[in-house]
Image 1 (cartoon, rainbow, N blue to C red):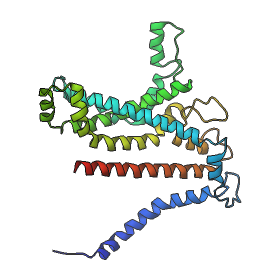
Image 2: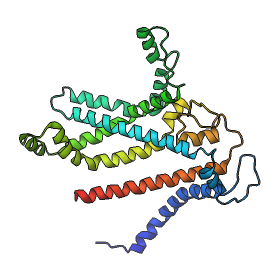
Image 3: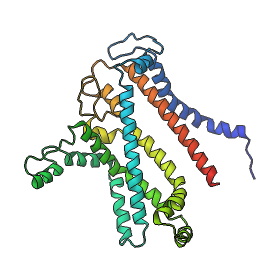
Image 4: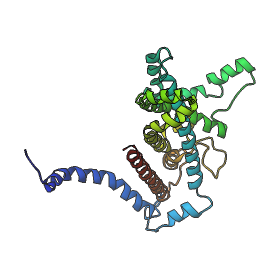
Length: 306
């Protein structure tokens, strides 16, 4: 049997490790450097300014950081909560042997998840259209010609609209994860509890849910991180709007949409690359902390199971 020293294995892996390090670290290091300068689109002779951009980001009244972060966190909480509720409800329904046509329903469940998000987003944008959208058209047939809902022009409704689309796209993932976990739950435990007089809710809360938690926890954390970085769906539907104040970003200017609009948006003028870099580094740190915490939670869940 051939044996290789650890030093030899490391030497074989070194080119790959160096390549990955260069590809991954170069943008991060350059962005960090950029955040410590006063670089703008029309400032060719930029200089080092230390933490001035971070100071402006955290401690000035006109900073968009807390508004955008708060909006994004609210979006994540609402979406992930709905993912969990709808995914759990659908999985419990599909796991019930009394439901007819389970193969069809399981296949239909994958349709929102399988269709490219760009197509789905544009279809929903058409559905929400104020003048020609089928939702408002059906409303006019029922309630009269005066019926109209500004799904994409009202700030709160625009927020609700992008939540609806994201839930439509993402809840099948939760359903599949929970359904797979449900099928591994021993039925003997639930049957024994039923014989002992436990109600359906008690059986779910004390037996099924604890056994599902190891599957639900990583799915929830992964979905939260993905939703936090959401860009394509929101941009295709609202472009971060509607904007109600010149001093504030739009009602759906979540983190990634906000950063894109600052650099490549229609209203971008003298782009302040340094301030945007400081914003990006801050978001990078936040996501790093979330990833670290999620890994710790997963390790604890595995230790608890073991």
